[in-house]
Image 1 (cartoon, helix red, strand yellow):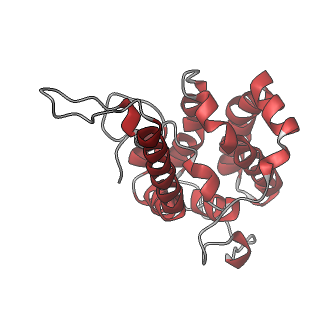
Image 2 (cartoon, rainbow, N blue to C red):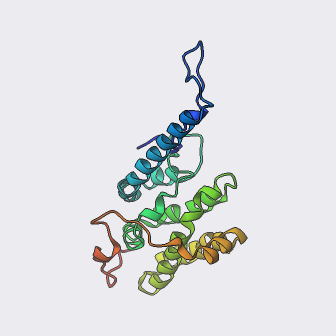
Length: 208
């Protein structure tokens, strides 16, 4: 996994000591070079997101606790994506089909993390482009309620009502969702498209 704060570098912000830093950092040529390098770094990072999202989805099933710690700011080194909108690169149907594989405690944990992820006001602006994905997730979960067994249905319904809906009802969320209207198509990794994912809606795993 990448560094916990996934941001691109800007040479113009770097300083050195004992004469070893960049010279003439205030020149137009240096600033232009720095901006180009920052753009290249940003684009390279964004191109890596689909593959990183695929790995994160695998982690959701294999180690739900670690997956959760990736998504919100904490004192551990695992909070890799606390202000990176990585979830929008996971197709909704793939995410939901993985949720159905979890035992009830892990399912509840995976859904409750949204409260901590979006409740940190310092990082909320960086995650605004993820809100349309969260809205799509809410709609998919609600449409799936009638195929779930009672305990799973109650867990999902409560998570939608008490975790996801309050986030989306926030004034800032409403503004994002109404003005950007999803901001175009989501970019999924080739071969990970939700349309290419087979889902058996008639079979529900037994509750623990």
